[in-house]
Length: 193
Ligand code: VGL
Ligand code: ZN
Image (cartoon, rainbow, N blue to C red):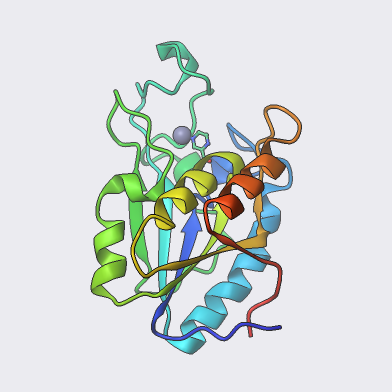
């Protein structure tokens, strides 16, 4: 069944940034395949008057998640570098709210809700359903969805065609999907109307 979005819907695009796409510093296999899928959801959001939020991993150059500082990742999504930019084909509408996260050098922040403002913005806008897609399934999408399901009166849907996993270990992405579903998120396999 196709889904029609309304002004009480929100679309959260998680970290659709160059460094998470093929050729990037922390490339997710097939990561750029989320772009056309999410563009369809963006079009449906614009058509239906739904709000669009785009989170971005926005690290200082000395962030603790980078290997040089003892963290698990190669440097990625360093503030104001091309790798940190949104994928050039992502059709972010005017009025999309950009949410930056993981800006503090000494703190990891996978969830888009770690920025602090997103929960309040959703609540202030009267959002009742949140549709989530982006990168990566097993890190920032998962963390964002697990935070979102904690908010009162918010139904959380994961756009399964619009996410891709890092899969450091095989099966991480599938486990993340199960964890999101177990926490109360709805796995959405349909296309937007
Ligand atoms: C992410 C690893 C490190 C993500 C961010 O956006 O999923 N993953 N930083
Ligand atoms: Zn990061």
